[in-house]
Image: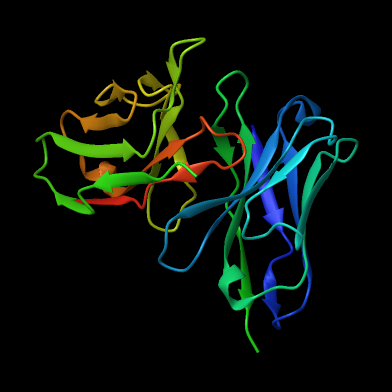
Length: 119
Length: 113
């Protein structure tokens, strides 16, 4: 079964850091570009970041540029999001998503992990 | 950035009736070199992650019932559910992937019975 499972969310103080992980299974992880998308409480979907299949190219939304770092370990079939200098407005459910083969958009999503930034 | 605007924000439709959701992009998402519209539709049920329904504006994802269809080109798009079922209650989002530096979603349309 194709699956993405996020972990690492939790409560963190403003200015703090957190690293999210996304474990992939059921497909050849190293063949696919991967993304992070977040959803604030009661709000819509916001794309955060993407990484290409070998990790050599990354892109970020302006709202997280310079604070978040996306990376991957293809040997471990795992995607990461290192989040630094966290702000209250980063509070959200964070989803990892696979960019489908030749469809350029997100065909598989994880269940999400909640990040709460609060003092 | 390409801004995606959905209408209506919420919609109530009777079981078995047609539901129509509109999505407008601030600039064309039609890529002329391959004649594809970089527009997708997602369904998000309460407490669940989004699920891809439609990509390339009108191609149904594998396993999606054929009562769901997408249409439109350029800047104006529509998601149609031909005969609403109880399990279709959800929030629906359009998304452009024409601009790979900034994927953007519509604000969502809440569909109720």
